[in-house]
Length: 227
Image (cartoon, rainbow, N blue to C red; front, top):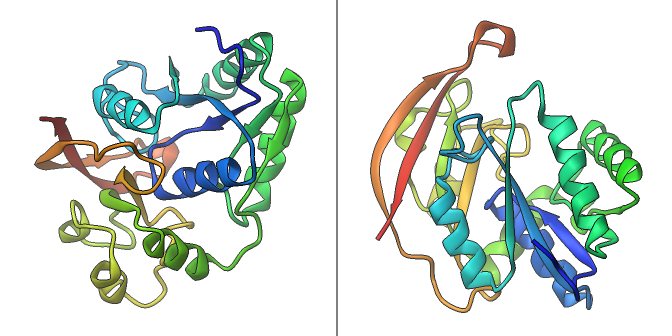
């Protein structure tokens, strides 16, 4: 995929934080020439949020930004990510936008891999109050559905809900409204950055237990399908 005019890419999960980071980057005058998303080894779903590629592509189409996929195991993730950044650099992109807020280890890693690819890491949400970012996201008119919850923090019935004021009110004490500690993930389907809403349907909620080496945590995924 060749991007001639793009000056920046977004590390794209399809969720609210990467979407708000994209929006802020665009509002600052940055041209977003590419989204990059990691898929699992099967290529059937996003590595982190479990969303199928067809919906991520529909999302990118509605945003008007080209999307590049790559498949990777967790063990291969860094190597494959750097290769995707280097490919973007070869097409003239010089900045990489991330949606991280305040986890220093994440920023350190992002700056490290970007340096290896000759890109500048940009974090538009960095060190802003988490709840303020959530309120901004909703006030702007973005709409999202909760597609993954961590069973250590939330019960299965939170999965598949709209990410809205009612969802935030129902969060148990100690669960971050931004999900920045890994409590939940989202899929954004409409908002000011979108030319049209992404059409989708909820199918079933599927449990998934992580392998022992990754903590054996139980997760619940809301499976989505295109319409």
